[in-house]
Image 1 (cartoon, helix red, strand yellow):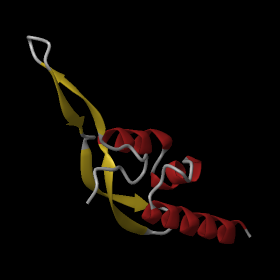
Image 2 (spheres, one colour):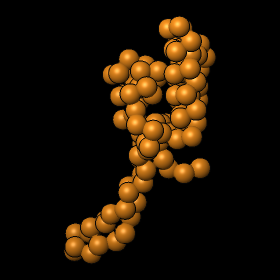
Image 3 (cartoon, one colour):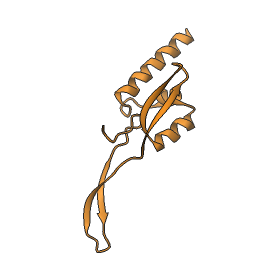
Image 4 (tube, helix red, strand yellow):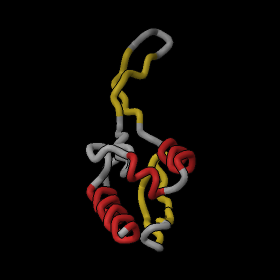
Length: 97
């Protein structure tokens, strides 16, 4: 399992740990990932995703999982999230017709 958010695409970054004597040692900065269950209103079901805490705040701010996915760029989303986005678009189009 990779350290990558399924909604925003945030991953691990590389940097230096700097000691008091200014010795630089390579280290990784890992995103704050959480296993959460989000509810899709359009699909009428819950979905388990591994997302960052920052993405969770953004989902709440935008008004839910459906609104977040419809506004998100396809390049940032994982394969599972892209599939969800397609299903939500399909349901919304069928409801509008």
